[in-house]
Length: 333
Image 1 (tube, rainbow, N blue to C red):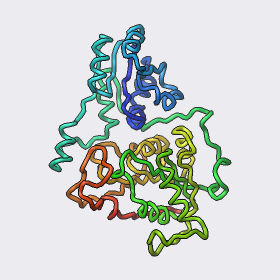
Image 2 (image 1 turned 90 degrees about the horizontal axis):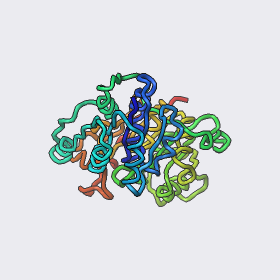
Image 3 (image 1 turned 60 degrees about the horizontal axis):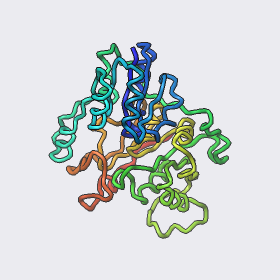
Image 4 (image 1 turned 120 degrees about the vertical axis):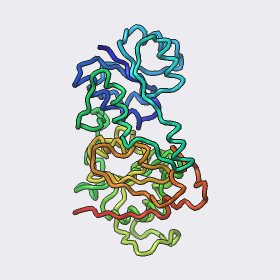
């Protein structure tokens, strides 16, 4: 059969959909096409389980006409929004639909009533394609890096040649990310060579962390006691693309990350993950999938979760979900 998979909400959701792609192609021998946004093309282009990638262009009519010509047998809609419903109706093919749990998420956020299934979203994605004969495998997530985006060890400083930890400092909202003081505390606690990964929007914060650990730098402006101050920082924020950052993660010994895209990419490479949760919660079903992981969250707060996504500042004003987070871990030599 010829199948079109639709997902264009984020890189994270695309990574979480990769088991569906793999199982449809490798196990069931279907022809698999994927519809996504243009900006996500590079995150899928090296996936060997995809026969063709379609990009949602500005002209929806043009996209629909091109998709109609493919004569799909089924559409697997993992996005499930108003736009995909219009697309499917106009393409006119049988479809399988991912069931969103917006009301149950709303109940958890607003009334702390948890009616969500204790199931990872990857497994819920796979439930969508069960009618096509799909069965769960044990391979986890996939992420394939084009050869041109591979980052060789020589690109990193000599201090990181014998192993390093990645700290992916980015996040969609302020309440998804550690405050500066806590980031410095975490880097100090890691006490290994650290690569800071993030986008251009993270450069200023990364620079401040880097300056704190530079030998001979002034540190009085950040009052933190009992720190070793021996962590060696390589600030790569804004220097690498998503694929290049994925390559750095693939070579790391450990990955520390907020609730962000890099967490799922690290899971695809089966890295030991230390995931940091602020106003969101792993209960939403998007924790690291099929890899060793440790969750850092302040589970004693009655105000968590306060959102399914995040805010630019703590609604309560105290930000205890991050400020009172305990970093309890040990990294072996």
